Structure formats: C-alpha cells, structure tokens
Image (cartoon, rainbow, N blue to C red):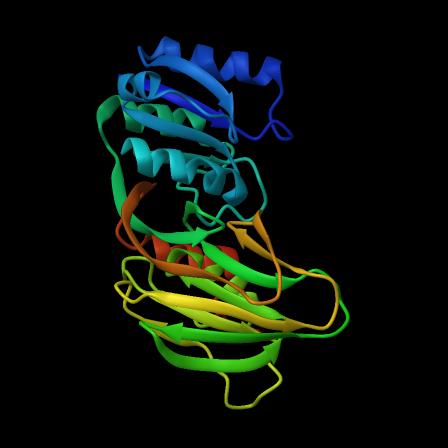
Length: 273
C-alpha cells in the first residue's frame, strides 16, 4: 500500500511529520511523498500512490481536490484544523486511519467538481466559484444567464456558485440551503442582493451558467475558486461555470456520516434550552 501525504504547513511541523511517517511505515504503508497541500506533483508520482492522505482542515482538502480529481486518487483526511467538515477522522484518530487503510476498511462518497472558464483558463473547484467586489463600499451590477437565457439581473455584493459539497461552506453563511453532498447539483446564491425577488436557486449540473459584470461602483471585483483568487474581473467581462465530469472520492466512516457531521459540527436540528 502506498500513499502521498499532503499537509497544512501552518498546522504540522517537520518533527511531527517524521513521527507520522514512522507510524505509517510501521504498518507497512509506504509514504512515497510528503508535501504542503498547495504543492504540484507529477503524474508519475501520483500514479504510484493508492491514496492521497490529507492532514489539515477543510481548506487543506480544497487545495488537494483538483489534484485528486485530475489523477483519480481518493482522499482520506484527518482533521488538524477547526471545523473539519470534509474530514473522516479527528486529530487523535491517526492510528484508526492507518488501521482502516491497512485493512481496507474505507468507504468513500463521490463529490463532483465545478468547471470555471475565465481569462482563457479553466479551473476545477470542489466547493464554490465566487464573484465578489473588492471594496466594502458600493455594489456590483450582475447579469446571470442559464444556457443563454437571462435568469438574474441585480445589484449585490456578488454571487456564489456552489456544489452540493460547498453548500455547507460560504453558501450556507450567505443564506443558501444545505444540500446532501450525494446530490450532483449546482446552487446559485446571490450575495446581499438589493432586491427581494432575487433568491437562491438549485439547478442541474449540465447547465451552462454565464456571469456577466455590467458595472461596479468602486475599483474592481474578484472571481475566486475555493477561496483562491482566480481572476481580477472588470466591467463588461464574464465567466462561465458548469458542472464538471471530474470528481473526487472522499473518505467517510459510514453512510450516515454527513448527517452526523451536521449534528456534531454545526449543531443542526439541536434543541436549545
């Protein structure tokens, strides 16, 4: 069994990594590489591994997701961050993680990505693509078309285009619904829209979503993918988002993991007295 470890360099230090590698090697799991999450790896190295093992929080998983999708490698994450909504294992469960890899006691959920085309480049993201203004003042004027047909025209701070996996991230804080990640859909969530009739919408991933920036009152706006700036967008520019055929396999402990995570990590449905 061979794995590549990706980690958050702000959470794990060299001495800790050495100790982790020894734990894997002691159980005959070969660590063929150990890299910060944002590092690029070759196809040759990726092809030698069975799993990408991630030590970090949700942000660390997002930085590994595109690589995992391109190279078709399952992700197993141990949470060393805060919320850890995408993590199957908590920070003190490394021995359980290693045992599950060794014994093949792993279950995975399929998570589809978004494909964003902007500035002559194409990006793949797991959570969301966001158009957001660069300054706290003013608004931006946005038009959104679905398969060429006008859907929205509104003033706002921006818009979030999210996968079902990303529905519990930025989209949730902006008022979007929680979506079971087993559903392959796209969620559009306007950010602080200046209109009562502009609401979130869920559509099939086969649709082509075109976002056009008509005007903005201050400076410029950003297009981000999973929290990273992809492009500095200006007036009269647009970008396209659609569902991707690429996906990742994300480790989970049991079939009810998502609902357990909602209760344990978000307090969902809990009665407060």
